[in-house]
Length: 471
Ligand code: C2E
Ligand code: CA
Ligand code: CA
Image 1 (tube, rainbow, N blue to C red):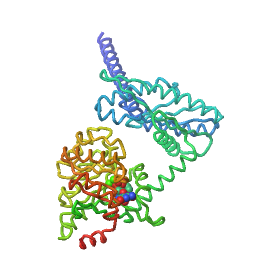
Image 2 (cartoon, rainbow, N blue to C red; image 1 turned 180 degrees about the vertical axis):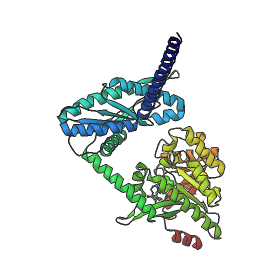
Image 3 (cartoon, rainbow, N blue to C red; image 1 turned 120 degrees about the horizontal axis):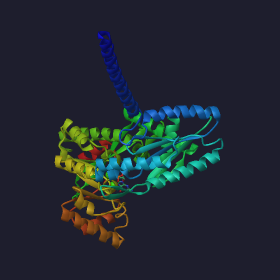
Image 4 (cartoon, rainbow, N blue to C red; image 1 turned 180 degrees about the horizontal axis):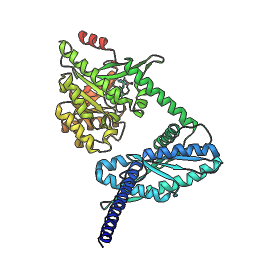
């Protein structure tokens, strides 16, 4: 009897242990599944992540090489997501990304692989597109159109409708010796071309894009080397008041490239913006400007002179731009009221609250903000009301024929008057002739500064100090 009870007890114990063991096994398997899922998926959208995608792309390239069957990578980037994210808030932005991820997923076949690489960048791998390139392209066009259609839709978040468009870049692969990083770069640069063409575009990668891409990469390297090799330098153009006294200068960048000689900014700044190298140039520029201001303060002839520098939209859009500028100015111990940052309308047109905040922070610190090239863009005077700008630079398009053209005169008169009402200083650019100056004086009296070839072309540091001594 005792033996029986013993056996029964042992059996109970064992089955309990087994049950627990099963439970632990099930739990472990669950945890294991969860970990595997997390390792392969993007947390926000539950699409695959970059690591899994790259792994699959490696396999797909090898398989397509073996069988000579086309595959493709599609790079999708939302066109106006950043603005929505900044204005509606990150939570709404996240919800929107989840909705779009779902839409994209629904368009694709089960065997297609879709991933989010971060931000608003979605990447798709499509295999088994046949052995004929033409057919593969046709199929991809149909798929890409469907994808665009699924995105270009009024998505509802928090009872608000958001209209989103996207740009798609496509790169094909089959039995060539392409690598994973090549194909991703190709699809990315095709997407970049699509973006440049406007909204809702689909572009297939081709050798011309490759050429442009290489040019861009080359330019990037060469700008980087240029900064390291001190090939960039500044020239200074005087800014003059109504008495003819130089009160400061605008610093303009020049590049003395070791192979091509002097390259004007119009040729390299667009590239520098595209590659974001403008941020590096801008950092260098700010340090140089601060050093110049310190040097000017030590010399009685240059003491009190102001210096303006140009800031690109790309630099200003960097999240810590204002903090970095303030830190640099503090580091050099420069009086901030002597420094002006020139920005263009393209920065203000988006009405971005972060930009507004950055301008305000810089202004509160004492740095001046000038709206440059006024007259070349939307030319809306409402910017003066909406942004804490304290200088307006009238572009030379209004000045060229001002002594002949009555409508230019009326426009400039109106700008002077509005600026005065807002307590904003005006700098008139591109004054080349005495007639222009005379007309301006008749319109604006003494309430503006002038800059232009009539008073001095942009010149080297020594020459600029030299003309000041002669004044
Ligand atoms: P901007 O800021 O409007 O600079 C004025 C440009 O007009 C300069 O050309 C200057 O040489 C030219 N200019 C000045 N007075 C006259 C005049 O009386 N007549 C004529 N026809 N032109 C005049 P530059 O130096 O070639 O600069 C071109 C543009 O490149 C600048 O336009 C600015 O947008 C950009 N840039 C120059 N330096 C920098 C920089 O350091 N950073 C950034 N982000 N952009 C810069
Ligand atoms: Ca400027
Ligand atoms: Ca200008």
